[in-house]
Image (cartoon, rainbow, N blue to C red; front, side, top):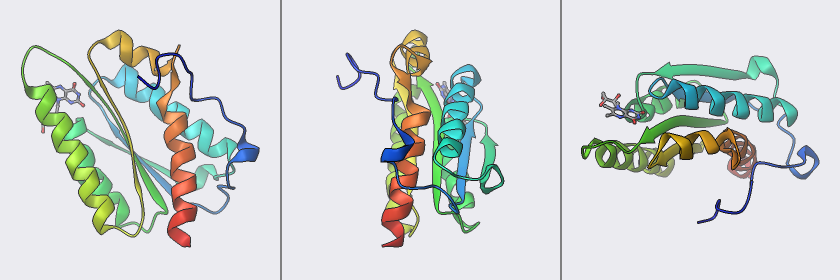
Length: 160
Ligand code: DLZ
């Protein structure tokens, strides 16, 4: 897999278009909060490192990853340049994992097809808690950081 040998979260802000003036919404699921809080911190820090003003970052919490779609829809109504949805779904003993993953993925795809502003997908879908820890500030970096860089790049693309 892509992250097996690489930490993809290292980046130089000089290689990223400026985030100055961009308004970015973070929509964060409360389920697996230990993971989503770290992803949120990673995204927030990277946005600021790229020039986004603290006042231009708005953070909203929703109960679970399934609710990220509605949270993103509401955020898009507020004239933001991009939305990052942050969640962590961890495989359990039932099929709930599959339904939540499918629901949030298809919902975000659908929003991206209908919205002028991008919605960036920062939802970890792991088999174990350790895999999620490794990707939220652990040995495989922090996917929140990568989502922030993606949000800035996509915001610029949306303005073209
Ligand atoms: C119910 C549920 C389960 C079992 N697992 C997770 C999970 O691993 N990660 C997550 O973000 N949310 C989970 N949820 C909650 C659902 O996303 C959703 O909040 C509920 O089904 C209510 O719509």
